[in-house]
Every structure is written in structure tokens, then in C-alpha cells.
Amino acid sequence: MDIVTNTPQSVPASQPIPDSSAAMRSAVKWGVIGLVALTVVGSLLGWLIGGKPGLYGALLGAAVGGGFILFTALGVLLTSKLPALTAGAVLLGTWLLKMILAIVVLAVLKPLDFYDKTALVLVMVMALVIVLGAETYGVLATKTPYVDPTPSTPVNDDE
Image 1 (cartoon, rainbow, N blue to C red):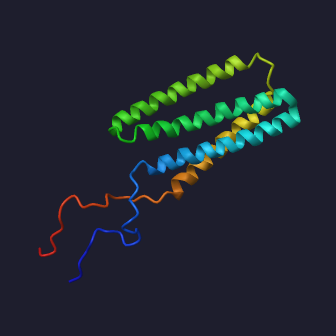
Image 2: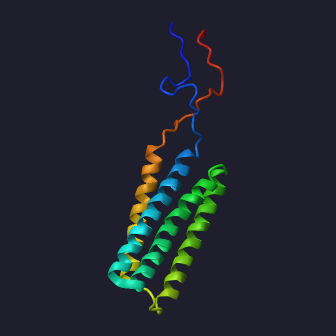
Image 3: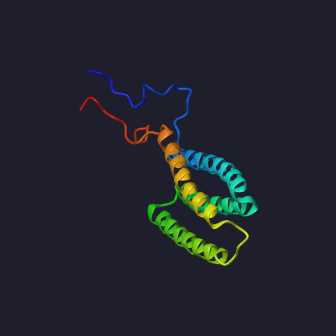
């Protein structure tokens, strides 16, 4: 009879097995990288096309759009060790807080004219798309086991 082991053959013994939060850490890392790249490119384009108001609109759009998405990933990362009910309540509360903050920020910005509204909206939408895409890449690129690699009970092959 063959011996069954619980050690994955594809992972070298010297390489540690990532924990359950590795995918979210990678998502946050790639999301921040994507947001920084978009902020630089969007700000440059906003400044070249719309001058100072275009620059301000692009910066505001990156902050609102990117911050909105990154706070969700950070919330999931920070609550990953909590019980499911507590983590769900915290995430729902932070989502509600983000919605209120986004409405307040956009309401405060609406009557002001120091920024270009088109640049704000374009960069905000691009931030949502790029940061979500970068976070998705970060999660999918992380190799984590779906099961606990250590057995919870010893396996007895004699039975």
C-alpha cells in the first residue's frame, strides 16, 4: 500500500507556506502600485490638458476613487483574523462610512471651481478600474493553499 503524505510536492521545504492573509497583502500592494502609477500619469495628463485645474481634478479623482477601493482591501486584510460575524459587521460599517464620506466629499467639491470636473471624474473612474484590476492580479498571482497543510488528526492507514 502506498504511503499518503500531507506535504505538497510542488513547494520546496525551504519556502514557507503563505498564510491566509498573503493574498490580501498582495492585493493591497498591487493596488497601491496601480494607484501611484495612475496618479502620476493622470496628474501629468490633467496638467498638460487642463493646466492647474486639471492637475487638481486628477489628484482629487485619484484620492477619492483609489482611496475608496483601497480602504475596502485594507478592511478585509485587517479583519482577516476576526470571527466571520465580527469581520462582516466591521466591513459593513466601513462600507457605510465610505459611502457617507464619498457623498460628503463630492458635495463639498461640487460648488468649488479650483479643479477640472472632467479630470476628476475620468481619473476617479480609472482609479476604480485600475486599482480593482491590480488588486485582482495581486490575489490571483498569490499561491496560497486552499486547505490547512498540516493534518488536524493523524491518519491511520491500518483501518
